[in-house]
Length: 124
Image (cartoon, rainbow, N blue to C red; front, side):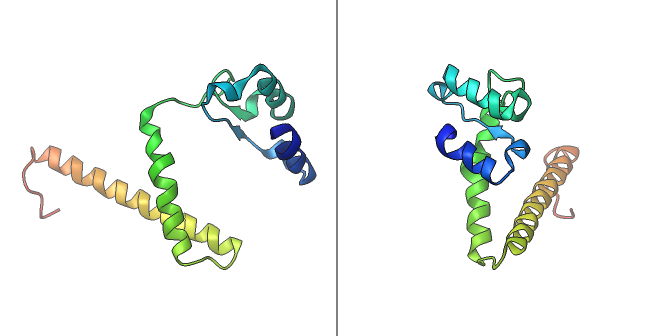
């Protein structure tokens, strides 16, 4: 699929040199021939995968992005059906900023709870 479809399409659109390839963690997807193909077209510096200089962290702490964040963003963004690519990008930015703001607010609340030794912090 990479050799016959993905790479030719990227070459046709003249963007192959701009792509960073993030490879999944499935062991049989990283056969010697696949590694060779990736190195040939993306170089070691543009492949994120174990057995390459930039290895993807295997931490389970990252998994919620795969199973929650992307689905959450997609559901919220497409609810209003963006009319154009700029609208889509703007909607993605707004929703990501909303999520970051909520996380920052939660961190502040947790810091206040720790400061007040678990006491009620309604005034916050």
